[in-house]
Image 1 (cartoon, protein in one colour):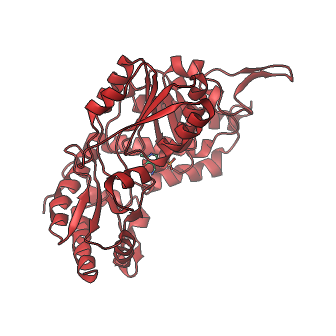
Image 2 (spheres, rainbow, N blue to C red):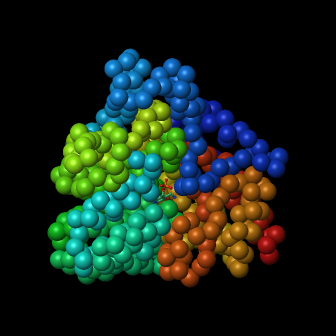
Image 3 (cartoon, rainbow, N blue to C red):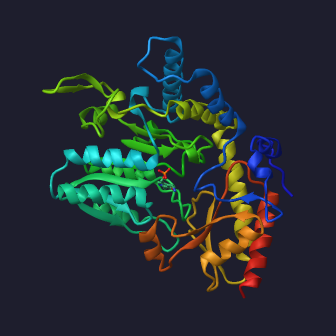
Length: 409
Ligand code: PMP
């Protein structure tokens, strides 16, 4: 068996006590990383340190604890900015997650649009990158258009170009599909959007922990992601937006911290990034996100990507040996996500039997019902890999799928 020389996977697994759990007496093999990644002890320690030694509300205090907590939050903002290549930390807005980041842009940027203006999405979007736009489209009389894809799960770029018109104002597309694993050509998508005078939002939920992301190299107008999918804590997300756009957008929520001055006659809003951060932020988890980013960069995103690519190219052909197994998502450029079905077996039955063998996979529509409709299915079984998965786990997974396939006939 090949050995990963990029980093010591076995040693890193010690950072994740949960990976030593047994499920039905079998070692847990966690392949639901697309839904959420596990959290290393280093990140948990930061949360503990925050609660035991630093907890104080940010921004509002002259006292030492408050200043420390504020400094930690703003350190994370600077680290996020450099992690994704943003020009300034003022362009980093903390939210609750990808979903809230997209809702923020849809609700706020949407107010700048006129009836008849057009939004382009792709057929493989997560509901989080569909429903916020639909809500805004209803309120503002906007039109939504959809980029189709090939059976392999590759976006049809000619069709995309033909959808762009002078009325196109926003293009919102996933960097990586959470079902198919397709890595979309987002740089090209953004360039074409700009040529048409539109702005582009990239849903980076499935890219941020698996690829090197540089928002300036991409020239993305908005880029969004969640901490819990990048080895960080739950409850925190990021909206990156170009300063020129964020400055002209109206606030999303009103409350404390997002104001400069308030009277009953008139309120003046705070500067970026605080204009979009109403209320007490999740400063504990924001501090822990810092640790998660340090953790990933300590290993190196390129190393993580190469390791996951190895897991994907190792597992795919072996899985295809299972009689009747079909993989959904066979784009040439894909991330380590494998969606599949076996014969006529229901995805739920396959997932339940795999669970009995200790294997955690996700089943269902994966919050991508329009994509399921395009594929003519109701759901898939999805295995998704992360930096701590091993080739041995891939072998056990394939063996388990073979057993389940035999059981299901
Ligand atoms: N977009 C994509 C592509 C996703 O995979 C997910 C999570 N499954 C989301 C958006 C939503 O992320 P969250 O639930 O963390 O807001």
